[in-house]
Image (tube, rainbow, N blue to C red):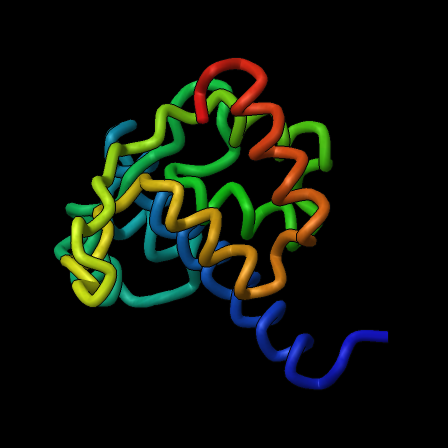
Length: 149
């Protein structure tokens, strides 16, 4: 049985995914010519609330074809929420084209924050408990075996 804090973390992750799914659905509806009034009715909210949401959605990324998420962290969140299988998680993280991020040359230099799409997101997912150590190592091993390390 998960601890109360693990339950909090899992619920927050699921809330984040639901928010992403909602925003993407609104953007898709808008791109298909649906009016704000139609979207508002479907979302059970006011047209002005839909308008405000649309103004804040310019930076919402969509998953690349064949991937469950728009980032490595989102893929891990979907796995932790039970939305994708272990095999799907592994294959997607092995295939992901990670953004390169050079390590600082000085061990005392934290350097800048990593940009989106780096391996640091998988490490973050590990720290959140979205992945086990064994699964993390298996993904690393597979990437290394394919020369993607």
